[in-house]
Structures are given as C-alpha cells and as structure tokens.
Length: 300
Image 1 (cartoon, rainbow, N blue to C red):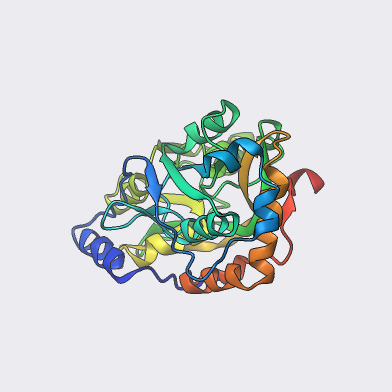
Image 2: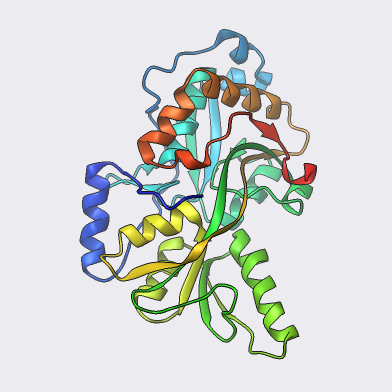
C-alpha cells in the first residue's frame, strides 16, 4: 500500500490528538453490544436476505467478533462505540441483509475461538488471510494491506536488519506469529542476536511502547501503522516502506452456509459503489479490491 493520509470523525481525532500530546495513544476497548448502522443509504436486498441461514434470518441479528483497538480499521469512538472503516463496512453488510449488527468486543486472539465455538457468526478485525488460519476458519477476502514498521522520530530502523532490537507487536497478529519471528530466525541463523519481540494485547500498547522508549520499533498492518504515526504528535516515523501485501478476510466457521452469503453481499456493495465510498471516506482506498474472493491465501 502507498503511504496515505487517514481521516477519522472529528470527535475521535480530537480525543486521540489530546492523548498524543500527553505522550501516548489510547484506543481502549469498550464492552460488547450492538451498534446502529452507519451505512447511510444502503437498502435491504431481498434476494440476499432470503439466502441467509434460517437461524440467522430468524434471529435478525449478525453477531460480529471484533477487537476494536486497531485504528483506523476498528477502534472505539469518544462515546465508546465501535468505529472505523471495518465497522462502516460491516454495518453496510447488515443493512444489505436486513440484519442488526451485534458487536462482541474481545481480544484479538479470542475471536477465532469464538467463531469455531459458535459464539460469533463472523469475525471482522483486520484478519490477514493465511494458509495456517484457513485450517481453523474460512475467509471472505475484501481488502489488501501490507506490513509497515515505525520507529521513534529521528531513529533509523531497517526492518530487514533489526537483529537485537526490541520490536513491539499486537499479540497473535501476523506480525507476531509470522513476520517478526521469521526476521528474528534469520538473525540467529546468521549468528546475530535475536529480535526481542514485545507482545501486547492491544495495538495502542505496542504503539506506546515505542513512544515511551520501551521498544525500538513496532510492526503492524500498513493502515494501522500510518494512522499511529499521524496521531503521535511527531513522536513516530515510518521505518522503511510497506511490504508483504496480503488479503484481509472476514472470518467464518469452516464450511459455514453463511460464507457465500457474505461473499455475495460484499460483492454487491462493491458493485453498487458503497464499498468504494466507505474506503474513500477513511482514505484507505489504495487497498480496495474489485472481486470478493474466498480463502485467497490457499489459492496462492
């Protein structure tokens, strides 16, 4: 993804900016609950609604697992409600299907178990679709994002030569499970010091570790890192360019009858322009896709 500027609602920006002036960024997690649709003029598609599994259609509710500590994708606004472009897109899905959206807020690593255990219908939380994750859930792919590092302002950090450095990540993200460990192994294989991986439950804690000097750098998805930099009051800077571009996916139980419905609904939102409008609103349209796929990672 290109480096782009991200735009959030004025009230949310004011709150984050004020915290940045104090030296930290705070996007804490609210309790679970339903959210009113912000999908605007999106109207129910009767044919798509008729294709819903009977239990969901009968309940009239789509239960969505989310960790809203990852701005601008998903975070909480100044009223404690889920906000972000992933939230706007999820609300549009609900409007298209005539369903109420119930956000179940949890830590990132609890979302997939909640889906496989039948607690949540879908998971929308900036999931990178990987072959390993596809062993647990199916993904409806709707976006592409890269990995982007950030470092303290004035400190030069090379993500490809970070041996011995302290790198902050959100626990169980792709950066934690795959990207940074692989870089660390390359270091030790070359006889150099391993990367010291600092794991945090919330992305804002990983960001603050760098701002407060506890870590040398952070690694996160490109829109998230660039947003953190823009809200850091000049305390953070990009460390290299974005790399390893990969698809985001909405997570669903393996073989779920809901998967093709979500795919077709998202494709309808792409085709009618709603999807593009939402991404442009948040300034993240560089990662837009034209075709909604399923399990793209395993397709190579």
